[in-house]
Length: 243
Image 1: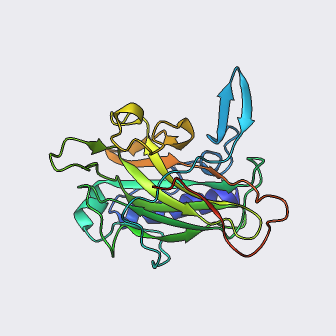
Image 2 (image 1 turned 30 degrees about the vertical axis):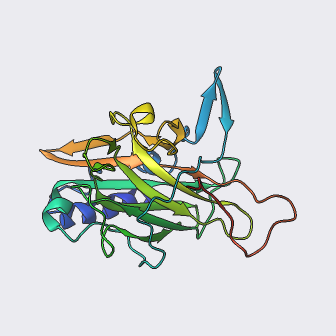
C-alpha cells in the first residue's frame, strides 16, 4: 500500500473509531483516487458532448452568516446522538480557473442547519483551510430542511453554505451546496433567487457500508475565477447573489 493510501485509510479509520464504528484499516472504504484524484470532477459543465470549465456559481448569504468563527474539521457536534447517527463527510478541491490547479491555503467558511433544520450561533459553523494541493475535508451532519414562511409550507432543500476566499489573485465566492434527489430543488425551492437549480452545486451523495456500518460522503469541488486584470490586490472580492 502506498503512503498516500495508508494516510487516507488511517484518517478514515480514526474517524470511524470516533463514531464508534470498528473497521479494519487495511480495507479502507474510500480509496485515494476516489477522494483526491478524480479524473472527472463535477466542476465541468457538459454541453453537446463537450466539457467546459466554469467558475462555481454564486448563491445568497442567507440570514444566518456569522463572520467570527473557529477553525474546525468537525461540525454540528453539539448533539452527539445526531452527530453519530447522521454523519456526513464532505471533501473536494478548490481549483483555479483551469479546473485542474488546486489553490493552497484557501479559507473556506461553512455554516448549515442541524438535522432538525435549526441554525445555531455556536455550532454547525466554522472554517477550514485547503492543503498544499487545494484539498479540503470535514465531517458534519446531514443538514435538515426548514420552512421560510409562517404557514410552514415553503420548504428549502437541504444545503450547506460556503464562503470561499480568493485572496490576491482570485474572486472569492459565496455559494451553497445541494444534494441530488432533494424534492425541493430548482422550481420547487421557495427561495426564487437561490441557485438550487444549478447542476454545478448539486452533489451526488454516496453511501459506503461495511458490516452494517454506513458513512455518507459527498464530493464538492469549487472553481474560482481570476480577478480582472489590474484588480489584483489584497482587497478581497466575492461573487455573491445580493438580496
